Length: 177
Image 1 (cartoon, rainbow, N blue to C red):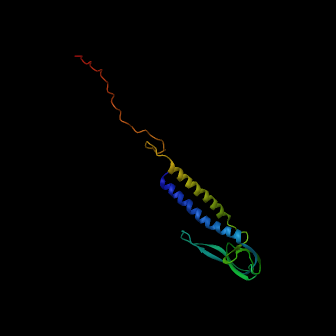
Image 2: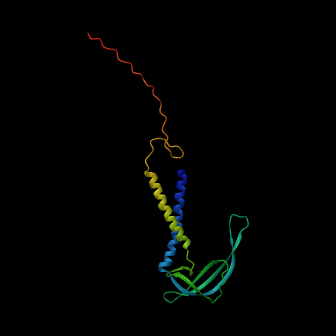
Image 3: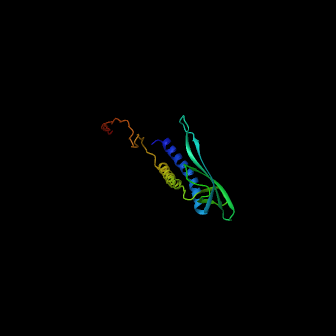
């Protein structure tokens, strides 16, 4: 694998990790500090929204807007608006169970709408980041090959010039004088 591919793979793993980490953080906020309350539906509106895609003709999707009123922890009345995809059969004055975060008026959702998909992606991204860092560390600590490498990482011995063998001639005897 090329170094560019490895870098793109590492960047992708970090991006998946960060984005899913944000949604996982929101889920943990609901799990730790979230409260459940019975809400009364005050207004329901069904409409179609345009969805812009790369196609030439924009498509539409059905959206249900729900206005809710529910008691908070101090028994004060709180109001919230939810947007749900699809047509949800909800009538005014109907009771719904909602989860909310005290102190944050925008953090309201219907009970049972946990985002476990983001949590699973976060855990997968965590393993991917750990695996990528381990892989990069192992690559960095791998000793350099003394010979050049071919494409499949097998060492190839460099071609060395053959030296001519010199034949040694016997020495002439020295005359004793």
